[in-house]
Length: 261
Image (cartoon, rainbow, N blue to C red; front, side, top):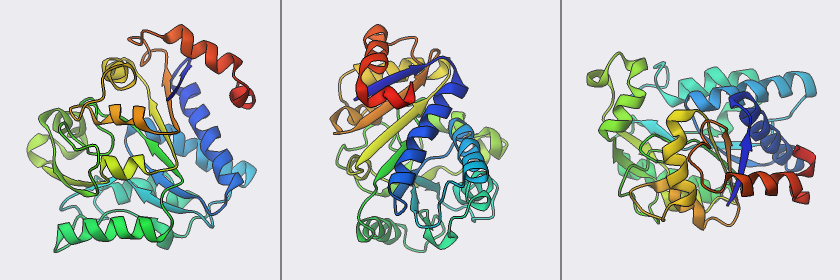
């Protein structure tokens, strides 16, 4: 695992964007895993700007989102389909037919989960997976006790997640209690993972994810097993990390990061 500390939220998001953009330029047929949430909005703004100013090309890539709420129509402003269309897809030259999210309205949710996994495999697997982290330590909606080999499935949301995400719904009582999510095992099969976290509210869980023991109680700790996982944080999110100086030294001295310094 590589940990990169940036001065602030904007710098962290900008670096994540530059890494993702290089992957896309190097491989126009990139299969890209995407995340949602406030942390990602800055990344998507940067990507849209790169498309507009530098002609970053999305025309051949395919995308798979980590998750979607059960029971929401794609037109619902709280659905992740709406989020992705609003923040990225409608502002770049991507073919919407190549953008995939789980269908939370499917008659058979378990079959939809199997179909989603099969589609990922049919397209060759995910090349680059963008991740956030929830306050419960989850990646995707892999809540505590998610098996480290789990696949796309329906998960009940924890009270912590409900409190974190309920603002847009007008209260916890109006929020879906279940979501469909890629499994931890699905995520770990991605060829590269990049987790972005900012703000002091994420400091405790980032320290657990990066420096704590691997446990199904905090699904983000599974990234310690990944062959190429990068964690980008701002100073606030890094505040509880023990080895901050070591991580800074690596970023400032390792040749692989020379173009990003």
